[in-house]
Amino acid sequence: MDICKRFDFSDRLFSLISIVNPSVAQQFEIKSLGPVLQRFPVLNNFVKVQNVDDEWRAHALLNFSEYDLNVNDTADIYWSKVCSPELGKTVERMLVGRLQWHLMPKLQATQYSFTPQRGMEDAL
Image (tube, rainbow, N blue to C red; front, side, top):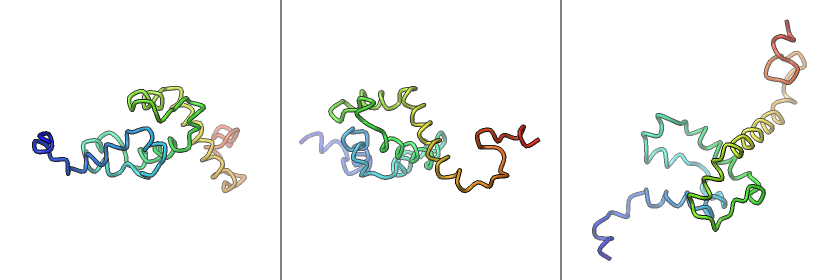
């Protein structure tokens, strides 16, 4: 009871902090991490909201069992698995594959660059 008198628990920080809980993160009820960046504006010097949200959505698409991501893990263990270099590369490959799947049908046959075996050297 004394702790409630000493600290202001009405601050939005306490509603945002649930995001790091693995069970909340895996449910993907929170669609954007924009409110976190609004609450901590200094983070905007290091990241862009869109990039953070893209990574957040990529996390939601992961096969949790494949990467041994368990909702019963503590937040530090869970997020150390998510942020591992190997998993980061997997998420990157997944995003690149998804982008190619969406973009490749829309590119013209004469389009060079940004496509496999169709680099600028091939055009020249």
